[in-house]
Amino acid sequence: MITNLGIGTGRRKCAVARVFLREGSGKISVNGHELADYFKLGELQYQVRQPLMVTATENKYDLVITVLGGGPNGQAGACRHGIARALAQVDPANHPALKTNGFLTRDPRMVERKKYGQRGARRRFQFSKR
Image (cartoon, rainbow, N blue to C red; front, side, top):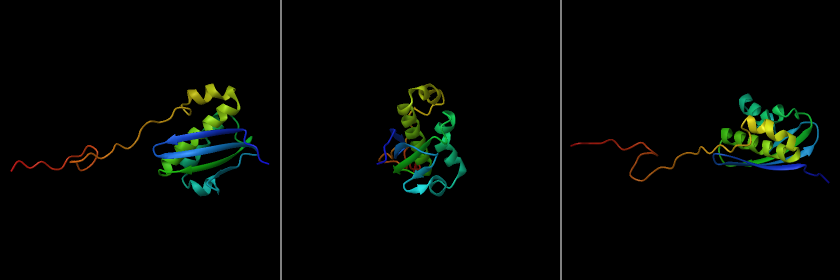
């Protein structure tokens, strides 16, 4: 029986990530894939690992992440947010370090919706005087 030490839900743009923190050696799996296989860009892999690096727990826990919605950037941000929440839940001593780096704050920026009578969210159709 595998027990979860901490559970965190992370959100960014339209992506939602559920993070399960377990005792282990630092293995991260995202939707059944290795981290490097799921996020091809090193920048996104780094972004996901940031909370672990700040709290010096890279080789202490295994992470099982299920993420859906959004694109690669939003999913990586959601994973980071969920990992930070799970780490804060497991050890309250991690909370100040995660908070000062801004990993516990949900990034509220979303794509603005398209309005009727316009070409995009803010772009208007070309004005014709005659």
